[in-house]
Length: 528
Image (cartoon, rainbow, N blue to C red):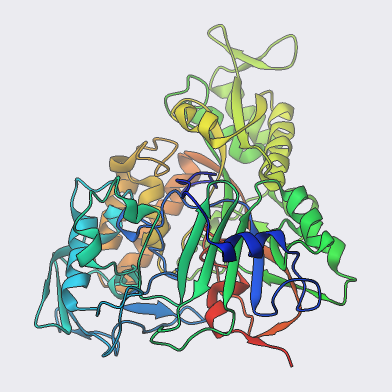
């Protein structure tokens, strides 16, 4: 789980194509920009472009490919592998055969040893990859000849194949560098449909089509991802024609509905908005306060007013449509229960209406990222609901550079959610072993019953046993909330209507680079 961050390492000297692509407005071939170029406005950029440190781990990287990929319905399909894996009867051995004739963008051929190097480096504890726990099941990975890769698992792990969308890197380049600090983090070489041509920190990343891509050279030749943290500024630049498309909050996207040259796309997602309630904070560390806040919040009102209906209430990390969702955890706002819970725990109303216990006011700070209108609006609504129960939530807007050092003590309006399998998002969100590990378990949540259920669900292939474990987790989160889950949001995009083939997927929290209608931009065709 994490929030958007504006980071990266600037590259000296962008290529001419990069400068041209960003200085020219979007909107077609008649306005000074090539018809085969696309400029997209996104809210943030990745910390790194190296899969060894987590970039593209859920697929859809434009620079790299994994052994497998997801189609529009998130079904697995072959990518660098020529077919889906052969799986042993005991579920512990996965064998992949590589596609023939694939080369990296520097012309070197892909081999099975590149795959082995990628996974072994990610699994090396010296590599700063906070998503390593997602590959915990891997005992060994080895090459059998140049075209076969064999994974051996410690235990049967039902969703393992979905983890092999992890992008593969070239050993001949990456092995010569420190994976944590090497230039590969900002100058990657992959097998994907696009090649990075420039990265100006906090401003833009530019790409050109890979003419030797194994899937065929894309028709969109130049792609620019413009980094624009402020939602309003993205909307303004889209309106002016400076962008071909943008990620926008629902309310801002609605402004463009009458424009015949633009089209709006809405993608369902697992992306939730939540308030982290750190156990190390003297107020949010009190379970009664966390329970009261859960009862005080009006989730339905947030969906109606903040999301303009483009989303749904979040009763926990899993959306209602997920097969593992426990229907009996649905709950509505209950201010009386919130007040009663605080009364019983000894939090009594003070003269100003804010509750006090043992001389301490029920007051804490909630940070919301600067420029993120959705999170700021959620934070303000949350503070308003909490105030009615006698809890003061002081909302502050700040950059992630300011927020990150404070996450272990102060609340954050955070986002999270992963597609594919409940294990992918819940383990890193809730397991106590990952407390404070970057953006994993930001609340420092520690519940032994939840830890046991997470381990059970991860280590069994029995569907009913897994579902029972996830049901237990959801019930525990109601009894002992480490977060106040607010909404699941739809992702809304507005793009120039001059390309065919645009579709949306069911999306994770991370969107902008990996997800969006451009998840398959290599397949777009110009409308004739």
